[in-house]
Length: 257
Ligand code: CAA
Image 1: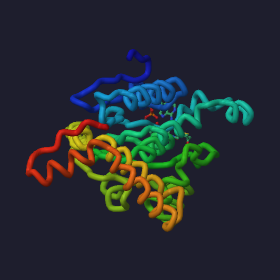
Image 2: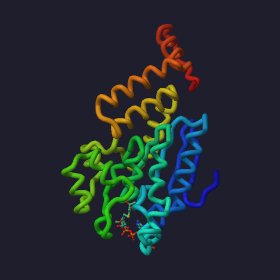
Image 3: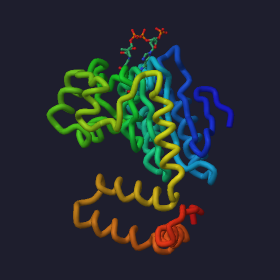
Image 4: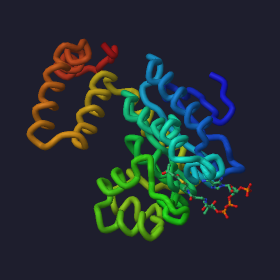
């Protein structure tokens, strides 16, 4: 895969996507978003990849949607564009995605990280939704995902008053999984992704689907949905292999079938 605004790599069985517009603090232009989604969808189809990591650089994960590209847009042009809806493509990726965040994760950058499944943050990471300063509101899920993650009171402050969260605060409020020194954030994210990628692939993807269903369903429907997914795994070779390995005290050899 060759791209203009991102760099991709496969490390072990982890697909890595790096935003690569450092001079613009990795602002998420339509071109970058489209390339990032294409790369993630390609990794999602690749049997050699079990999980993905998305990152920026030490200074910025991404400082938001590209303001310069949006500044003169009309309401009709915004509505016609597939730019904002490209965040929805993240939701359709079946394999786990970890955001490795250092520096600024603002606006669409914060929304991108929140649309991933887990966040590993460097101690220098800052999360914010500063759209209010531009006379707009978050448009790629920020009001919804941030509120679900950190609660209404704090989300109001972040979105209405540009309150920025340090990595430690983001950890305390449940937005991120771990905070690590800035030299190690990518390594730690890759390590976590690798551990997950080594597990039973169909069960991993099914678990992700079941957890994400919590945002779309009430408890009874969610529990019933989980149960159907749970039963469905008894049709996989991996379930037979995993249970046989346990009973015979050996390491399971996952097939992803
Ligand atoms: N879009 C386009 N360019 C951006 C950008 C963005 N979101 N963020 C930074 N840049 C560019 C700057 O224009 C600057 O370019 P030039 O050197 O050509 O002037 C370069 O990146 C470096 O930025 P700064 O000089 O501003 O760096 P700083 O360290 O002084 O400040 C910052 C860093 C606080 C992150 C500041 O750049 C900033 O406030 N950026 C905008 C953040 C923002 O408002 N994000 C929300 C965007 S809207 C959105 O995301 C909507 C949505 O919900 C999808």
